[in-house]
Length: 138
Image (cartoon, rainbow, N blue to C red):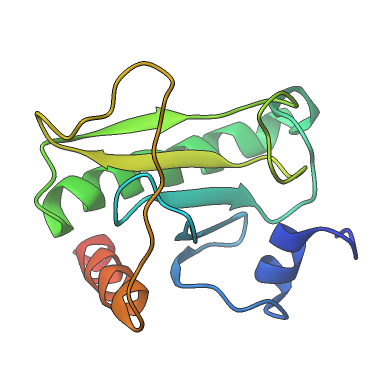
């Protein structure tokens, strides 16, 4: 854990977040500036900055969680698909490895690498998080 890292704070429970998944190795939570509502970030509990830093034995848990969340987004939010991405250093706004899982629908306006961000209304993030937790539970 890094005391300065926002995501380590979320993992530790000292920083509030709309959590959707917690395993021994991975924590998933809603992005506070989502591309589309339901945009989820998955982070390893261990503080590592980039994918090459992640111990090999943690690859499967991280990507297994990514696969589960992608399925939950299509099932729980009625998305047609997902966009899964990871930045390493460049465009990495928090220096803690994280995977983006973004709900997609045809005609949603996401094109190229210009991604407008949106915001949740008060209480709306927890509604999305609850729907995703329910989909993950099935």
